[in-house]
Length: 137
Image (cartoon, rainbow, N blue to C red; front, side):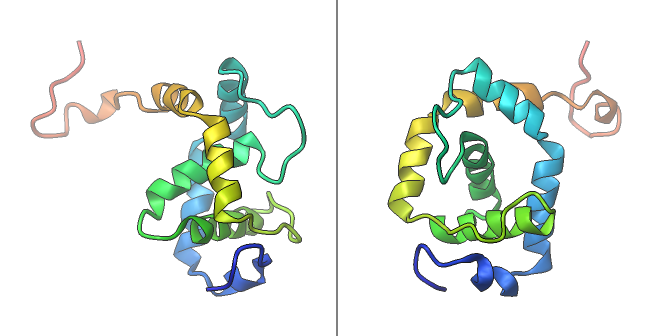
């Protein structure tokens, strides 16, 4: 693909399933929940950045969805998916791998751990139907 800093035009060839995957991710994990988690862990950015903390949270989650792709490619997919859902600016530039790594380091693990604790709850309705799963008491 193209070099870091290239615009979103390069992602016009992405698969629809990639864009849908990002859309589902942002639908399942509501932005208000992400904002609450960032506020509770003290990770809300102090100034406007190319990569806001909320975007970095979604980016780390997207890394799990697209684990075989390079950092910058996952960022392109995330931006394209958000653009596809109408939640992104068209003229945004993909940051370099170094900028992405710094943003992830600033975010830290605490917001992701709290988000996991809030989202990953047992599916009680699935217990009776899933073989081998012990129902919650």
